[in-house]
Length: 486
Image 1 (spheres, rainbow, N blue to C red):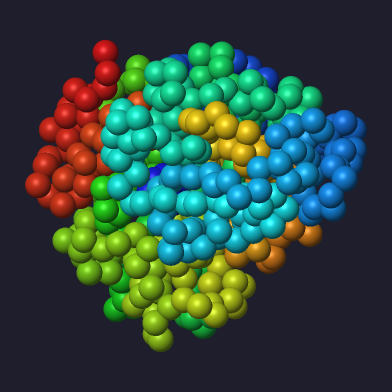
Image 2: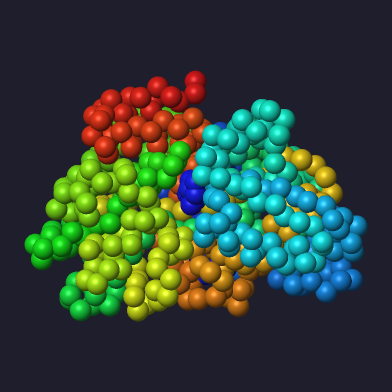
């Protein structure tokens, strides 16, 4: 999930080939150069862009050297993974922690993605993630019980461990040549903190998407909105027809509230400049500013109208984010619109078919001055314990085959530029990637880039209180500003 406990769109090589996502970048409405240095202390707020998303270089497209054993993924010559495939670490175990649980959809996809590695090396991958990850990981590390590898959905949280010296830089054991072959430079910047390339990008998703029940939608004669004004008018039309338009839920255990932060980020990109978005993420534009409050008030006009939301405003905080879209699949639909990243398809009913039972459209722009921005998020992989079998798994994470569970099951896109169309099991993520290709700018999930105590703390908590009606907007924004480390 995002973030996020998740929480967090081929967007495959096509996304990487046409944009490769951008987080905080120079303030223009065009995708920024991926080779610029990060603009803030947050890890690589500059994202992959048009300049960095051309077809892979000749070096990147050459077949990587393989070890003697026949394995279904590329292997860095002379590294720990090559040794592992030759049987040197058979019988060992590597633990991985993260923001999803082993038996939830993402947990199953992770396990599927590890099968090729385990079969090739004899190393067992033990995933121990949980929905309280954002709070528990610091406790584990402080207690000297750090997992071998951590799957971070928040670059801000990742950065704090890099700065504390708990994470082993990937450049200590993975060659520059290999990293350049596997990744677009922009992705590598996401994993770089204060000049230290500490982790690798694993998978990512596109967030600026609105899902709808296609068959019922077509039968009702509803049209895809092109502007925010059109979207609000459609929402009212559905209400006039006697239905509620939106399925919204923000409950997510300790991460409750991240859905509301996503909406805030999407509306920030649509109601103010990229300079302001970047300044906000860096802590230079306060939450209590007119720009941030305007973005929140824009989505509040939908959220706080009981005629527009399934269950009304009072249900939003108590409805689990993964359960929220279920009503969209009832017959007839009990809600018609659900804004969420492409991973949400993992929570759709079994057997629901893309292009038949559901489809998506781009969350429309509010002000044409700010173009058609796209919000994205992704997971970074970092190593805490330096052993050869752990290094081997870290090397495997640099291959697109390590994302196989998601590529086949849907819900995320491989960050590795060596991913091919054939690795994907459906057209859905490819369709998302094409939509992203039309964006005029890209930014990484803002709360994920903020310091953990803000992005994964006060922001989640205070925005949830605001939605619940227990805190006024001004007070919530001031409380978040007070949480920012000085």
